[in-house]
Figure (cartoon, rainbow, N blue to C red):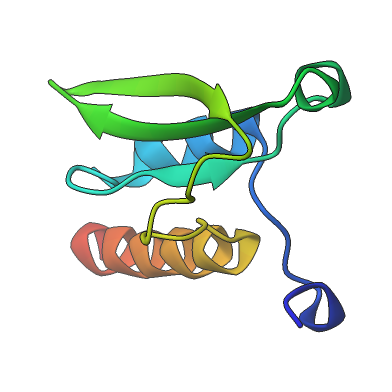
Length: 92
């Protein structure tokens, strides 16, 4: 369904960009796109912000996925627009 809407899971680079806009995933974690070589070995990547640091963590795919879900590119777009609007109000 998300794919049909043009939404995808963030890459590591996109997640780092998102974290520059604010403190996200301070109490949750989000799955990010995992390179094929890691997936082939049964791993998956997720990340969060703890101790004022963005952390990238690996796990085994067949473990139960956390309830928090995915950070989506749609969220990145929304957050960017929100902060741009907020910044423009402050500047003028």
